[in-house]
Length: 180
Image (cartoon, rainbow, N blue to C red):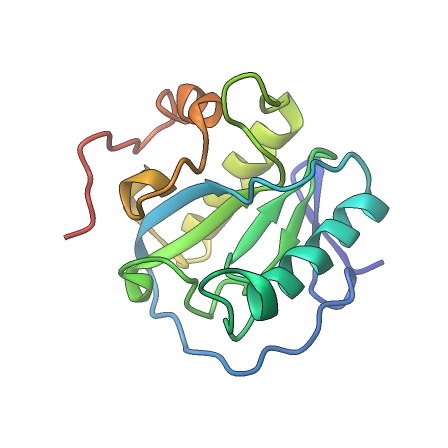
């Protein structure tokens, strides 16, 4: 099942979760200086089957049903499931749907991480950190990147307070960043 090892985690390709083809793509220039952490605020998932289904549901919502619908594809570069694995969205080389998308890599956690909802597990935290580390190693992410929350680039609750409480302790966290 299209698993590329990423430390102790799998990076599942679009083919492995049976993504629909993108309507079109816009290339992303590397290395990107900003990594945006978000949450899709949907259902959580705990294994390959439910996470793959959540990826397909998210792609359908992004392309056809969300208020800003009509996106050419799933809006995130990568998503991380409750199973601690990474699922390729737009991937390393295609712009995400974030303000300043030509300079941003978007990583989203599957689920809702607002207060009284779920919290990140250790596998999810490690998977995100391994993905970012790998991105720096292969020149996709600038070694001096800024790590920011989705709420710093859009008017949204995403990624949720439970994620902010975690990522504010990560290297490169920039609490002052605002999209200009």
